Image (tube, rainbow, N blue to C red; front, side, top):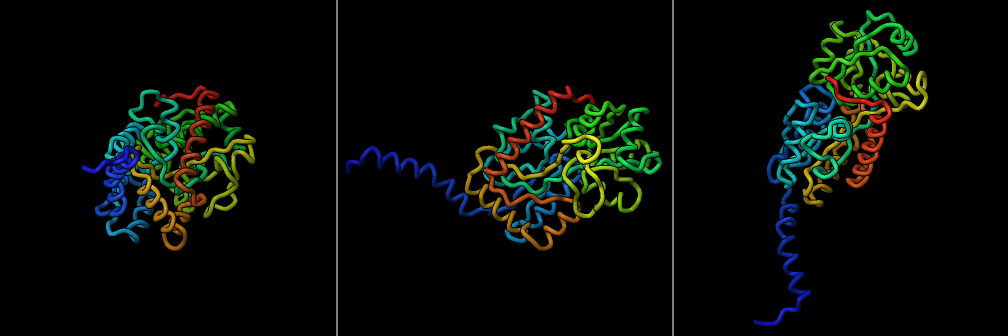
Length: 325
């Protein structure tokens, strides 16, 4: 048997180990990909996931399947995605709450965002909207602040530990408002009760609240960040009016289980960003009030998420926030 130098032998061994991954990447995708969405249907993340799936379906031989795995403030769906095989065929399509806020508040969530996931792409970075039922006697954010300093008021969110919840609690803490959080299992039920006047205020995603604001069924008072969103001109931000520097945004993105081949992550990123670069799918996202971020690479998306984790840890310490239902 001919002598094989040690370096060459190691090279062949590495190639043998790498070849299944390369073959996996070369044939990707050869079956439907799953997007696990840790929210119920109708929530902003669910809407965005379905638009992303359609954008990829136009480029791939198989349409991605969107599966809703709601519950546990998003932890049920996130755990399922984290435990999925890292073969490129399962992703979490999630948001700021389950990926950054919830783990910062609950030490025993059954997944670790830093260790169990790799960022693939960011699809939306959008402020939230403070809305009230038309029967509440306030028409501006300044009037809302004055009213809730003098009167106790329940406000709804899509669940404990969500960015909607955290935005309301941060506003309460910064201004000393008499706000009481009412948690729902998703934005849909919370909106239903706010429309009915069961609760009179809510912090919601722009995508979810906009149709009701346009129809006059809810009154928009302020954005939680930024300086305006498409489709709702003239809405001021909290930071520009009553709390200087207040800047809270919601975001959604696609995340792969840790260990997913980097080549597959790069392909999904490139195909998704290309599908949303212009035309129908981008227009549909923007029609929901979404601000689409720059076309970040997976590494840039990961850096953004890490910055968000640090921000929310600081907020939670400052306000002594906790999940209280």
